[in-house]
Amino acid sequence: MLSHHEIATLILVKDAQGPLGLDPADLDTLLEHEFVELEKRPYGHARPRITHRGHSILKAVGLRR
Image (cartoon, rainbow, N blue to C red; front, side, top):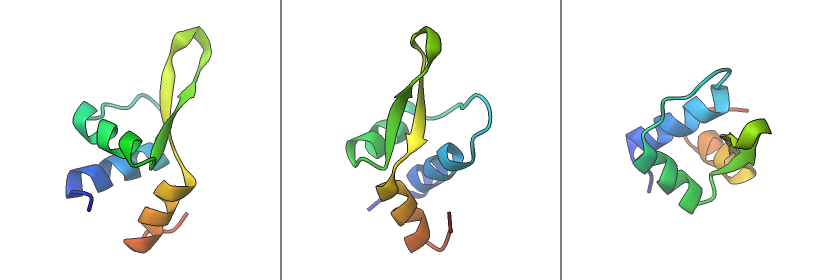
């Protein structure tokens, strides 16, 4: 089960338009459960991106795509 912080982090990843200031522990948990993945960006930067599993979690807690 995800904590409130992890669910909030998942929402931030879903809605992000700019830089993210995410808690590394929450992000690690989401990566471990494959709710987010790291998308490779130019210049070696990686950006978290919500996966299908992550969208399913948000739908289950009442948040739609």
